[in-house]
Image 1 (cartoon, rainbow, N blue to C red):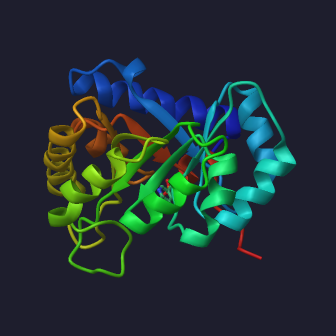
Image 2 (tube, helix red, strand yellow):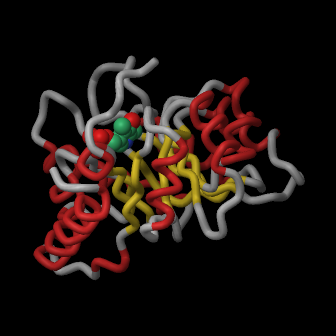
Length: 228
Ligand SMILES: *Cc1c(COP(=O)(O)O)cnc(C)c1O
């Protein structure tokens, strides 16, 4: 699979190819490297290679790692996992962007945790593209109300939508639905143009469907270590 610099370069090349094939400008796409289960040293190695956006999906691991890495000029942490309301403060204190806002109580908790009270936090509304309510995300028919609720909280900047492709459906039609749901959010927040979609297995399809933020883990980091 090559070493870290070559894997990163190869994925960036494939992102640029997919963007051009879709008639899109590659520089308008943010590639987030998902570093979950990997040590803080991997985040530092990625930073040295120019990576400025990293993603984590478990609050405890995220908080620990962010503390260990410490402040690095321009580094943005994206929180992409299911969030408990009682962990809102911990998440807010380290994250630049929360991709997994999926219910009004979590919006309220993230807003209440703002420090100072008007410090802005970028949030994406996570949508469940499956019929299984156990998967993360708001049901599509509740999305508009969640957008309105979050938009009314002064410390939250609603930027757009996020989703994970279903396992039992090809990614393209699922991401096409997501794009339609992004338009629903824009009826509430007109400049909420971000679409966070696409992982190792499906980022080309996500780019074709208009994704602005890709969350790519194993293709860049290599296989995840066993969770300890
Ligand atoms: C782990 C994870 C990713 C990255 O997955 P890969 O298949 O390793 O690219 C993206 N999004 C979320 C929400 C994740 O939990």
